[in-house]
Image (tube, rainbow, N blue to C red; front, side, top):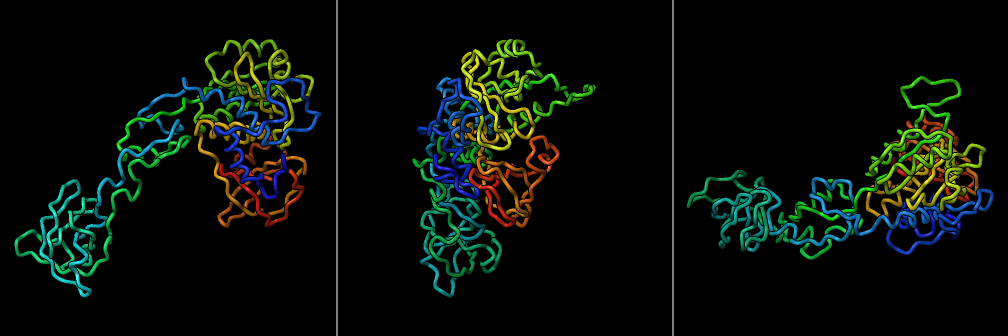
Length: 444
């Protein structure tokens, strides 16, 4: 494919837009070699970010099967993705109503200088009012149905007197002229019956669920949450809270990825820390059934003790290098028929791998999680980047629209990651950017 353009865009849109498209239902641009075709090595030409996103989407596409759809009441559907379009069964608003507390009138009854009106019985919200007669004004509350014959509302503060009068046969009010439609919410001005209210794949947040409730819809068909088996590997890794022997490190990857996955709407099952024994890892994976996807961290590079590579020797799994920094080494395929992704072991690398590959594919396929918001920002200082790789840096977006880079390029800098609120993208083909250069950043 064509190399990404400078300042964070792929041909056809932003990085985020490209990733979202790759995860969707359309035919994908295929990677040079599918996951599951073994024999490709990291020493060969690296796969592009877009190609690997496409491969991950192909791997997970079977999880869109019909047996993975469920119908949930609205109060249980928060954070899920819509399976199909929702057509509005009614119009919103369902009737013309008042935007203000005031008087409903016929605009044609009022000369330019205003005139006196006889006051009708008031129209509270929820009432079905009588038709409006000529020369009459109906006190009306916000949201109340507009009486038949009325086409405008005069706010109460413009009336003389500027308060509601008790209804009597003699009650009169002076009102100024009003244009037709003034302070009126017309039927269907928000959405009309028969129109698409929400498109398939929509992420159901509070606003979307509120719209469905306003339309009288009580339940909705959504994709089932994907269940992930998360495995941290390495003899050098110790669970937090335990004593830390010399040469050991605490496991941050498990907590980091579990939190990211749960935030993204995944069901996560932690398998603890697997040793560097390939046989033990295979046994662990076989005994953990009932999951849709296996994700491991560590053991995917070309070192002598890469346990994940060794454990997958007889499986349809490919280990390759993606032209990305950090997170270049990746594993992808199936373990005994179940989708498998192997992320690198450094903390920043594994999180960037999740954000670049798994999160956007899930959003495209299942409508959840909501895609990361891509915005444009300007660098507060210059940077360099390996020209043949897509670099992902951590940064803090400032109120003035500039982004301050946090830490360096190294993938172990957890403190810098914790102090960041954006991922900064430097596309392949860009070797250096000056202070003030515009980049694409994703809000975390």
